[in-house]
Image (tube, rainbow, N blue to C red; front, side):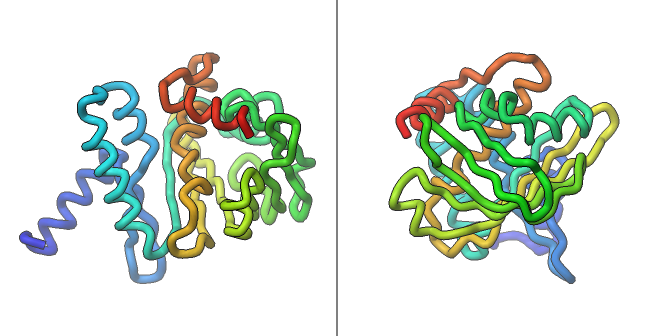
Length: 221
């Protein structure tokens, strides 16, 4: 790159402080991930249809930079308590409101099965690998809504809740994805998390063009 290593790290620090980049330490390495949730919120609220190609280019850049490891990390801050956030993640009625009508049911114990129904049919399933309310939930994940995603097999989703003042930081890590995996497996996370934030903070449902598009796709399944 046409700048020093120090310059690159300085820019990354600014992006990290702004919440646009999420970092994770793995041994001696510090990995950086573009945080699609706030980027998507900015896009839905401010970016006009004339700037859509620029947003698409940023999305393509994200995929090119991250596809090598195929570990996707999403982070969002929500003004709520860990207990209320945990309930929203595990209560079928609440979850269906921000998850485009998909009803996810389970007894939420380690080793138990969970399944998601959309349009009256099974569209996703998995196992609760680790359940530590209200802090951490680790699940295997298998998409069933189409033949193209079924063949991707099983991946893993980790949800971590950390209290920050009167709010919570929710970090979602979707990993164990094969290189070049179908982006339908993880592409909906920004809208799901944005809908979760809107519901818990305002009691309203997210009605951006993107959320309505995903809702229509989910009902069609």
